Structure formats: C-alpha cells, structure tokens
Image 1 (cartoon, helix red, strand yellow):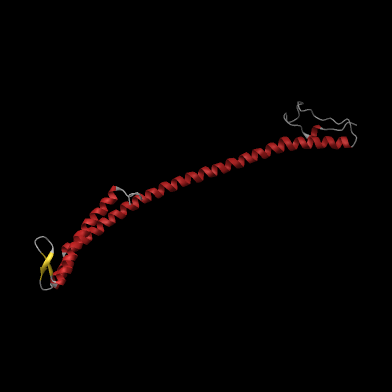
Image 2 (cartoon, helix red, strand yellow; image 1 turned 30 degrees about the horizontal axis):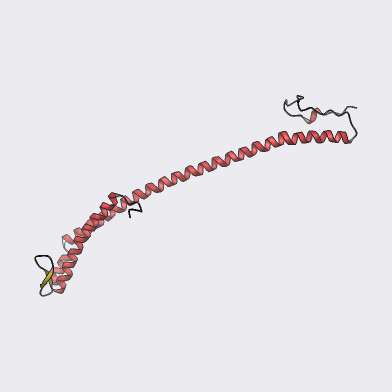
Length: 173
C-alpha cells in the first residue's frame, strides 16, 4: 500500500478501523464460545467450561457495544474512502490538466507546421515557379525565332521590385 501511494492519514483510518474490528471480533469470539459452553478465565483464555449460554451469545452480538464497534468501523472506512477519493481525484485532475496542456502544445505545433508549409508553398510559387514561368515565356519567344526578346536581368528592378512580372516581356517587331 505504501508503494501505491497511500498517505499516513489513510493508514491511520485503516489502523483505527482494524482496532475497532479487533474489538468486534473479541465480542464475536466470546459469543461463539458462550454457544459452545466455554467461558473466559481471569487471563481471558476460554478454559472454564459450562452449560452453553445462547442468551449471552445473542446479547453480545446484538449489544450496544457490538453495534458501536460496527458503526465505528464503517465510519472509519468511509473516512478512508473519502480521503482516498480526494487524493486520487486530485491526481486525476492534475493528469487531465497536464494532458490538456500537451494537447494544446500539439495543436499549436500543428498550426505552426501548417503555417510553415503555407509560407514554404508561397515562397516556392512566388520565387521558383514565377521564375520558371518567366524563363518559359522567354524560351517560347526564342523558339519562335524572336531573338530580340527582352529578358529581365536578375538585378534589374521590375514592377514588383523583387520578381519579374510576365507583363514586362514584350515582343519587339
């Protein structure tokens, strides 16, 4: 139980319940021996024999003391269960909170990866594909034997100031 994380308070409830249980067992042993006709001597050992006393046995198991022992045992076990539930409930809530933080971190990570993917796609489309389209357009003009096609130079500013625009190409006739 120590390895399972039971607290001192929980052990105390169980110890007190055990003590009450021992008192209850003592009454039951006395009642069962009365049925057998055995009675305790001065040392508390059942060495005196006599006629079975069923009335004494009945009185013992239905006595106020017997029911008090039972009631105290149940109250202590209830306190034990309440303490156990509080401890385990707190542990569950803590774990759920940590799980929620983990999920939030995962969602944020996924959103960041999607954003990075979008930026990467934009960069590829705006820089690489646009440059390839400009090159293709120039190649089409050249394939039509239009050797006077103007192709923008990499350092030459264009409309977008960063990348060449297809409208900057023109045929000279």
